[in-house]
Amino acid sequence: MTLVESATEQRRVEGDDESDVYPDDRGWVIDCVQRIRGDLAPEETAITEIPLPSKLTGLRLYVKREADQPSGSHKHRLAAALLLHALASGWLVKGRPVVEASSGSTAISEAWYCRKLGIPFYAVVPDTTATEKKKAITDLGGNVVPVSGDIVTYARRVADRFGGHFMDQFTYAERAYDWRGDEGLAPELLRAVPDLDWFVMGAGTGGTTTSVARHARYTGSGLKVCVPDPEHSAYFDGWFWRDPTVTDKGSHIEGIGRPRVEPSFVPTTVNRMIRVHDAASVATMRVLAAGDWNIAPGPSTGTGVFGAIRVLLGMREQGRTGKVATVLCDPADRYTHEYYDDDWLKEQGIDHRPWMPTIENFLRTGDWTPPETFR
Figure 1 (cartoon, rainbow, N blue to C red):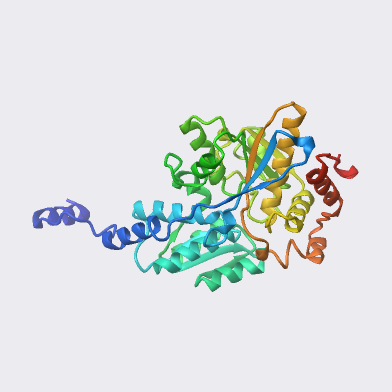
Figure 2 (cartoon, one colour):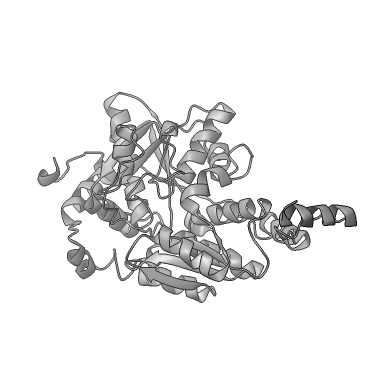
């Protein structure tokens, strides 16, 4: 009999029917779960309609205001889902930290939840992450670890070092979201706009778009999903060529686009993808911020609205009417010194100015005239 078998037999003889291999502090777990599902549950957010000109009669554009969540972005829902998934799976141990790899917004939302639950938190972020985002994490009691290499690999090391749990949003987002239930972004959206035709949103993990697509299929909705993808992201080519091994150098639009096709991006749930120039994303962001719709967005919202405009144009060309929705992902004040700073944009090689008249003119008249260099 081996040492392990002997110890197992001894516990059996002594009547010990619990294992100390995997600690189970059930009281703490239940308390955390009840709080996340109760007073800390994500809030139902409002929808803003952007009025379209008469040339687009019969077409409507909606923006779901996820930046109004308590932690300031649509990642608030993801953070809640990931924590519930980890708690229910027995992965979290009281007193040990949660570690996440993030460009910022998911980390902010997880830091918000972890502070409420008394869980230590570490965020491994790219060293290019917006200063405002890093400050938001530390203001919430989190620890920021900026790195120049692969944030996922480094996050695993940090979790190992501190005996914590690597949350791994890029793997678990699509399975943590509850797409069957009647709570969440998709059910809220379809309750507000039951005959919605398209949901348009860029992919970071891919978890949100996947959950929306699954919910639509599950509930019998005809809603389709379009993912606008920024320059140098691997998602478009991975989707188009049906090749999950595709890689690229990664996106300049913070929060969306990845250098590889992440496990939570499920291509079969996506009906259409659109490549979007970084300059077009930033221009759309700036036009929205200057408008009268009370929308002050970050750059990923610019990508989403640009994609929605392209979908609307396609519907008009086909003589169709219908409704398109996208998401206000996070607020402008997280990017004051980056995407709202012309000098910073110049350093990044992003010139949004040629696209500004195109977006402004479309929202004013319905005409679409891209800059000559992008035709």
